Amino acid sequence: MKLRCLIVDDEPPAHKILECYISKMDGLELVHNCYNAFDAFKVIRNETIDLLFLDINMPELSGLEFLKTLKHKPAVILTTAYSEYALESYEFGVKDYLLKPIRLDRFIQAIHKVQDSISTNSEQKPIVKSEPLGTSFFVKVDGVKHNIKIEEILYVESKGNFVQIHFEDKKILTASTLTKMEQKLKPHSFLRIHKSFVINKNKLEAIHGNQIAIHNAKLPIGNSYRQIVLKEIGG
Image 1 (cartoon, helix red, strand yellow):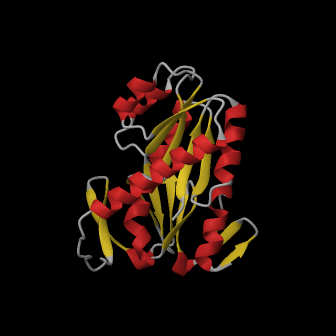
Image 2 (spheres, rainbow, N blue to C red):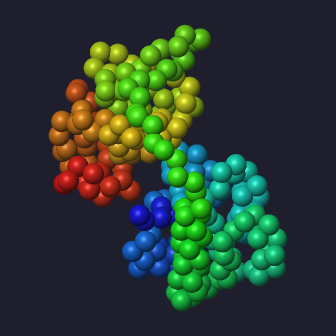
């Protein structure tokens, strides 16, 4: 399984170097690039990120200040030109601290450290007996709980702090994030195709270029999701 990576740095040259290094590692996949902490927060809230490459000195909100805002942190590798923050950074549980200019051999060492840490944590997790998948769940709309039959969902669309669940004959808008809905639906043959859309693979009718046809809708395939989508449907 590849680690889904996010680069957060206000300097474009730093992105180019990290992009180059990430492309050389089979176990890494670059999902997004962000140039400030506020954009990064949106990505982490709506996407699955396994590894964060984070600069410390950024305008408005520093890397360390940004880490303080995160309730659930991915693995973090700090990237900076300043060594004086090293001791403080490890209080946040970062996996490694890379000084710019970052050398490839040092980058590889940091990645191995992250991979070893993740592997160790996985081995220590207790084995949980799987439960049979449910066929429906409830969502609340204006104080009323609606029973949603999973097999009838066409796709789910992000609407800010809400998601809209699309069926053949209706739409239901409920307070949730697309990431939470994706986690609930993924075991039932659902697939994230875009930062704003999760689809029912069983309802997919056709793919036209960068669009997916489901019922009467044509949904975009995000650039960072295209390879995953093609792999999932055998394209």
